[in-house]
Amino acid sequence: MHIALAVFVLVGGGLFWWHRLKIFNEAASDVIDGAGRMRGHFRRRKIRLQAEHSPLGAIDDPVLAAATLIFAIIAEDTLITENHIDAARNVIVEISHPKKADAAMIYAKWAFSQIGDTALVIEKVSPLLRQQLTEVEKFELIAMVDEAATAVPVSHHYGQRVQKLKQRLGLEID
Image 1 (cartoon, rainbow, N blue to C red):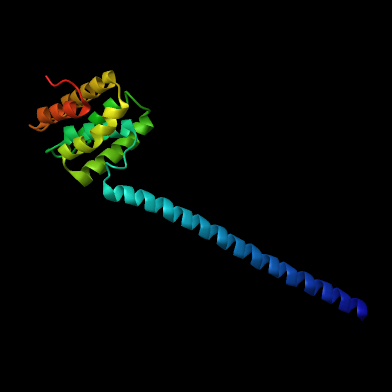
Image 2: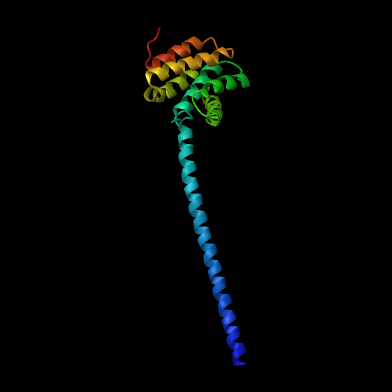
């Protein structure tokens, strides 16, 4: 009888501690999940705050800035079609990887739809480009704008926008 009682106590003690370890494991998982959710919350909050100020303020990549700028200039005052996206993408692919160009065009289309003002896009994006591009790259950017503009019908403000871009990039205006 005492052997059966000892086995019962050992099995009962083993089940008790197994149950306690299971509860500790669940508690640890909850803590880790909570920490992950908190980290994600702060990350999303940072991105949301950047985007709230302006989709243009969140741009820190020259390729993304160029894509947004080119798209805004060629899509101003026109019905945006796939031709506009393709024209801008085709010139962006010349300076970046195709996947990066696709992502840049998605962001450019979204940012321009949020802003809707080409002059504001030029005003906000050109300081980054002015700072990060060389003189030769600035002229190449203007050539890219011209190349994309030849592929689609552009606004009657096109010439003014290119002049403003040249001015904001610090290029000599002809």
